[in-house]
Amino acid sequence: MEERSNLVSAQRHQPECSHTTDAPELSVDSLKKSSCSISSVKVHLAAISTFHQQEVFRFAYYKLLKKANKGLTTISQEETIPISVRQLSYVSGLGFGIMSGIFSLVNILTDSLGPGTVGIYGDSPQYFVASAFMTLAIVLLHIFWGIVFFDACEKKKWWALALVILSHLLVSGLTFLNPQYEGSLVPSYIIMMLMGTWAFFTAGGSLRNLKLCLMCRDKDFLLANQRPR
Image (cartoon, rainbow, N blue to C red):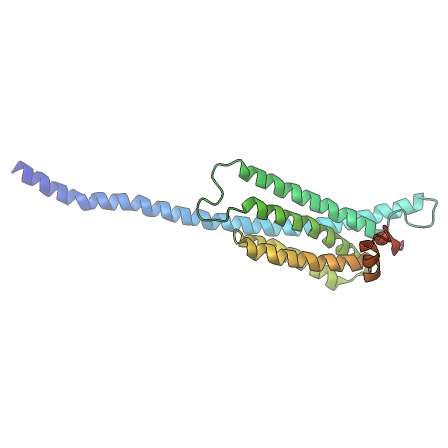
């Protein structure tokens, strides 16, 4: 009788135990999903805010360099401007690109220290190689964006200014396609080549100068057509 009563009591308690073990699993899954959604929203908001800050600081840097250039003109005894706008745009874009590359490099090095192994859950094992190529594209794009941005502000070409901002936003959005690197790297490099061509002609380049450069006949072809403003 005692054994039978024990079996009956065990059968009665069995569904209660299964119910109590399922409840924590459901709560943990719901917490994981909610935390993932919250983290993804935070990442998107951080990327948008960083994009806006970069463009605002780029415009503020343009205004600051213009005022500094006017001060140098008043102090200088020469009639020409000491530093042209094209040179300022190149230096500004290079500075933005180097800063962006350093921040990307620090994040990649932090990921390389672990914990974890790249590609263990089926992701691409080419994480570091793809990140290096993306960092290279971002650095070059900042140089091209700086040249076109400064020229657009100088000549008041607001459509060109809008295209620079939209292309920057597009490249920033493409990084969310990772780890599908072919979906982010290929469009980013296409945009980089288009912006590089645009920046080349904006800086005073031409097909003739490019031909002379490739044939090593004109080493200063980038500075040949610069005119002080």
